[in-house]
Image (cartoon, rainbow, N blue to C red; front, top):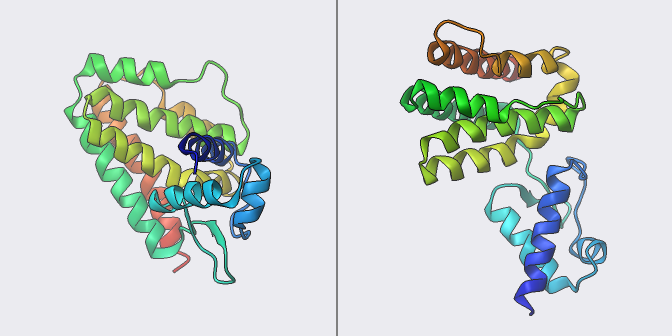
Length: 200
């Protein structure tokens, strides 16, 4: 197998994943992926295995693969971990660094589409992690963003104020930015945790 071809398929898959090109629950077939990216089955299979290792796809009950399904208690736990991690990171970052991280993640133009809002939230959370300079925090938040990407896309339909949430999370006009940011992050996540608990 040509390693560079496997890498190309993998990167193309990740780009399409981030762009919201896949449908949650729909079966992904290795041959279909190979055809999509003009490769043989081997590099397509290897690329899919990497995404499975990252928690982005999982086996489909009818064979093949699908996007990982995060719901119920599993999603509650994912949100809780994301919240704890981000609040802890904000607590550790100096005020000037925190402010710069938020400024850099604030979109000049917020695309009010489900994918646009999901990307804006992910960009902010990753910027908070990057501000710490901790490579493990960056990797963790990056992976959590990817796992939650399609969940966030679907949420936009449930939360009519999703665009306003982004603007609230990136608002710098407060007296105590660190305290306010921790409270905003908690509010954002608890809202989603409670919604999921209501469905259990």
